[in-house]
Structure formats: structure tokens, C-alpha cells
Length: 464
Image 1 (cartoon, rainbow, N blue to C red):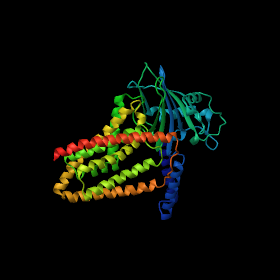
Image 2 (image 1 turned 120 degrees about the vertical axis):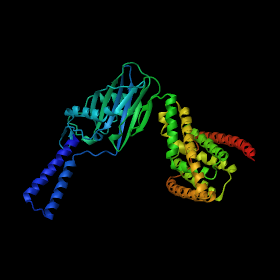
Image 3 (image 1 turned 180 degrees about the vertical axis):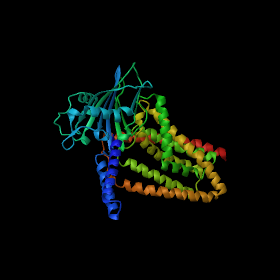
Image 4 (image 1 turned 120 degrees about the horizontal axis):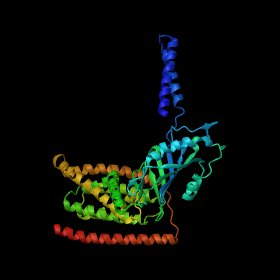
């Protein structure tokens, strides 16, 4: 409908300009052309004045509840996100509530149900019905729970005298998907990213039995198993780990700093294994709530990650022995593990009841990503040092470039960190419990260092 209106307005604009020019005669002057251009621009602006802009942030509240013979979805969506849908209005733009039902159902079909796919036991539920639809005030809090949302959506609509602007209204809807037989595994693909520049779907999964789960989905997240099996969680988190190490520029540069001067098999095994063990410890510890619950902790870790790049690059320049680098790699690995945990925390909602499996899978994905970097980087570095520049000079130049990038990151992150206020924690039972957790973590780290030392001592002696 919007495209037809725009085409009609363009034709009308051209016709008006043509009539204007014929009225002035065939002789065009600069003044005539200027007036024509201004008139055309004004008509085009007027033609677009009724178009709805794409909202910046759209939040969709959604409940999905399987029942014996159907799946019920309740949704609350800002009506302004459903553009190019004509809603009957009155006065200065108030919705005609008593006449809006048909247009609201059209909006639901065009913008919602056509882009939501529900699966039961891996089978797509291809049919659906819009059972209830209504507009609500922006201050309405009925979607705080499934019970109140269900009662509200199927309840009495707003009075027809309610003065509610179109772009301030919430559209509440109930959609049902029939089930041919009982099902146990459910998944959803909510392709709702087009509703706004940034669309966030807060999805509550309400199974008849088992744990209720909440998901925070950004954009169009693809297929989301609502109660994943262990192999589904494993595969998802392996991919997530690989993607994180390849997308995280700071982690990637640190790995390069580790391997630039040590590209033979034995040094690589020693250094990379130390880094892997260390970040595995803090990654798992973070998932089990051993992180400090303070706003300054994430920016502190990000600053230390940048500092690790600077230090390792400078050590490459002045020279380093791999027999001691494994200890430095282990120390910085602890820091990077906390950094990995920040990315993992946003994904743990997809783990279901398989927390440990997901942690191990994410860690495996990180190791696969590191191995990919090493497999690609080592031959390139060897070729570079053999044909272009000497090894020592190449190590200094590359490390200087990495130190330069790390220094800028460290300066920017340290400036952001300085904006946070520091205060001593209250000496209470919660603080003492956190101290005990940290002591336990330090004990685990100490045992890991001792074991690595024993292994590497034999490893070094066997090479001499």
C-alpha cells in the first residue's frame, strides 16, 4: 500500500510540474526551472510526511505456553513498529478503538505471524489462528506474568472514548498453533528484527512440566531450542566459542604475541597449553558466580587484556625464553578467561539445563579458534622471516605494531575505568562468602601452576 501511494504521488508531482511548465510557455528561464524544482521538492516532502519512520528500539514481550492440543503465544508489541498499516483514526490521531479490529489483525499477520516459526518435536507448526487482539495504553503492566497477560488480552477492550495515539499504543495479541499430537521439544524462530533498528524480544517459555525459562533475543536470532538437548547446546556453544575468538581482536592479537617468537612445536605446545588451562579455570569459575559483583570489574579486565598485549609485545622486542613464557601466558590466561566469561554470560540462556556441557563446549570452541589462528599464522610468519625480513627484525617490527595497538586500547579503557567509583565492600556475611570462594579459586590456580611446573620441568629436561 505504501509503495502504491508513493508511486501515485510521484505521478501527481510530475503531472503538476508538466502543467506548470506548459502554463509558462515553452521558453524556460532560470527562474522558472528553480521554481519548478522547489515546487517538486515540496510536493515530494508532503507525499512522505505520512510515512512512519523505523523506531530505534523495539521491545517485544512474548509468552509461549504449550498445552495438550495447542501452543499459545501471547505478545505485546509497540504499534509504531508496524509501519504502512492503516489504522482508523479520529481527531488529532487517536485510534478508533471500536473500528480498529480488522486493521489490527492485518498488522499481526503482516508483521508478526508471517515471521514467527514454531516447531514441536522438529516439525513446523504451519497453521495458526489469531484468537484475540487489542490495543493497550503504554503504561499497561499486564504482561508482567502469563496469567495477567492472558486475562488482559482476552478481556474487555479499552473504552471507545480513550484518547490513544497510534504511535503510543501497544498491540496485544494471542495466537494459537494447533498440535496434532503431544510434543515434548519446542523451538521458535522469531524473525522480528525488521520491527526496529534494534529489536529485543523478551521470551518466556512456560512448559507444563519442568523449569520455566526466559530468553532475551536480539534482532532475528534464528532457531532457538526452548529446552535444548545436550548435543544441541554443545554444538551451539562450540560455534559460539569459535566465533568469539575469531571476532575478538584483542584476544587474537594476544595469541599472535604469544607465537611470534616461538613457532616450533615444543614451545607452541607449552605456551598455548598454559594459556588454555588458565583461561579455562577462570571461565568455569565465572560461570559458577565467582566473579566480583561490581560495575568496575568488566572494564578492569578489559584494561588488563589490553595491557597483556603491550607487555607480551615488549617482551618479544627485548627477547624472551619460552621456558619462562609459559608462566606469563598462564597469568594472562587467567585474565583472558574472565574476558571470555563476559561474552559467555550473554549466551548461557541457551544452555538450558546443560551448564557444564555448554561451558566445556564454549571452551572447546575457543581452543579450536586458537588452533585455526596458529595453523594460519605460523606458516605465514615462517615464510615472512625466511624471504622478506630476518627473524629478529621481523619480530621487533610486528611486536612494535601490536604494542602500538594495545597501548591505544589500554589508554582508552583505563580512561573509562577511571570514571568508576571505588569503595570498600561492606564487611558482612556475603563478603565473607565471596572471600571463601576466591580462596577456593586461588587454591585451584595454585594446584594448576604446580602441576604445570612439574610437567614442564620434565618437558624441558627431555629437550636438553
